[in-house]
Length: 305
Length: 172
Image (cartoon, rainbow over all chains, first blue to last red; front, top):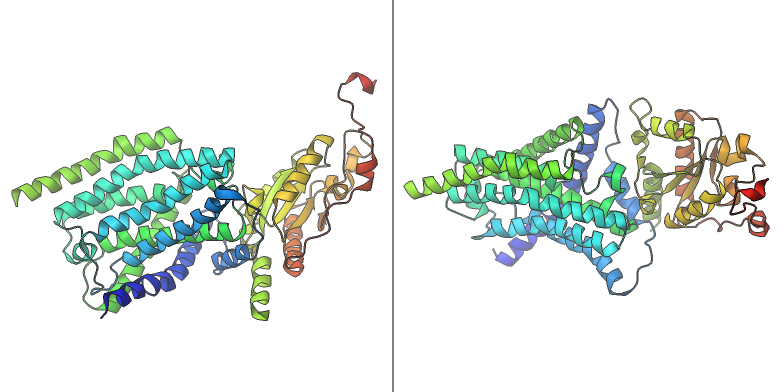
């Protein structure tokens, strides 16, 4: 088949937009519902993220002018596009193609929404936006070292930066160490408790998104949902056993993603927000040890083999 | 097109995001508003979410009798909420200024500053009454469909001379 058509189908249909947007809404609902159940509440109805999205589309937008206004409108769109691209790269189906180094592209696309959030916060010139952006920047420096080291250790232990090859190879104990380190980074990546610092409502209102409204805010919500799908999907891909039957592979992928979302929500409901310096210390002192252990043993094994 | 309008109407009704503003309240109504989000009352079942920024909100929940200092802030926040929007006045204070009536430090009641859609009387109102008010405001919001209420006309407020002197001695 024409590689261009395959790539478009992956971006737009499965696991791209047509699958990922409902999945994003579903994951957002699961997160809110799980937190509600943990707190002894009933929680939002099933269609709630969809209602929120459509309602935001129908609201007015604040007037913006000049180049900075144009940029303010552009950031959420860039975030959605890159998050959708990241989802489209996930090798869910066994014969989905991919290319050497697509793991690196996936990581870059996963990082772009948080860059956009930082830029948007500073762009909005609101004091809460600027504090939120500064926090997001510090947070991203804190967890990304661990996140990237974990990915590199997984890739180095299996001698490839190609996602599909990584998904097909049998999992080694080393990979589990890497997956564990990735899991520890996910709450910070998705701004969940105990690392919900950039959007700490009780301290800095909505952080970088304070000045956003209507359709622009809807795009931010969507990009956040797609980040959920991409980040949990990445971990699910690395953790899932290789299955040749495509529908079974897709089913295992969805089930594993769902389990990770549930785990993250339960952790979010059970913890309180910690301070930014404690967060940085947590990632740089406690978690970094595991990541360094993983990467050094990966390199060691590579030298021996 | 008609289907889209009906869908939008449903979504507006099912997803009221709140912004809470205190305009000089004694904190009684504020506690009750927070109580309506707790497990016992669980406003999230209605799709309600307390938002940090007025720009994200659909429904402005205002408590307090609107003091002279707060009046401008109330107007600013009301303008920051983007349409379609609704205002819920929580408690007896914004409805009638309650026991503070005739105080010279007040610009209230609230309806003299911004147009109010739903009044929830009580001192303080119970959380279930607040939830009922929010649900009513959400259905008003859904029917309003893009049309905003007329901007606040407060003739008494406009013609009133500055009743509060800058310094304290003049009171005596």
